[in-house]
Length: 92
Image 1 (tube, rainbow, N blue to C red):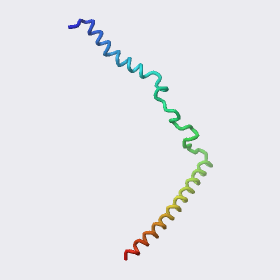
Image 2 (cartoon, rainbow, N blue to C red):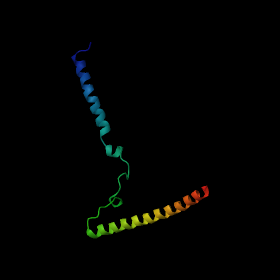
Image 3 (tube, rainbow, N blue to C red):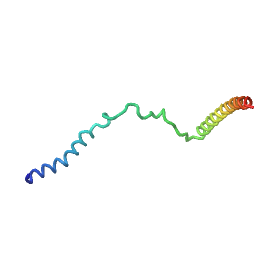
Image 4 (spheres, helix red, strand yellow):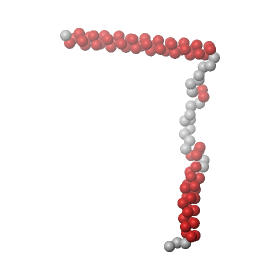
């Protein structure tokens, strides 16, 4: 059996080994694991309008977009309606 010096050495290894590994892999993490251009730049992100004019212009833009998509959807519904009427009419 080993003496007290061996036990002190083993205890030191049990404590120091994880600390040494964390120190080795933990330093310079920004350069080691960084992905260039991962986060969007401020001009690429959404900006919340705070001024009254900006809010009104944003609401108008959203309203125009909603109406455009509604018109597009209605045109598609009409096209699908004509197709389904033709298919249903030929069955009878």
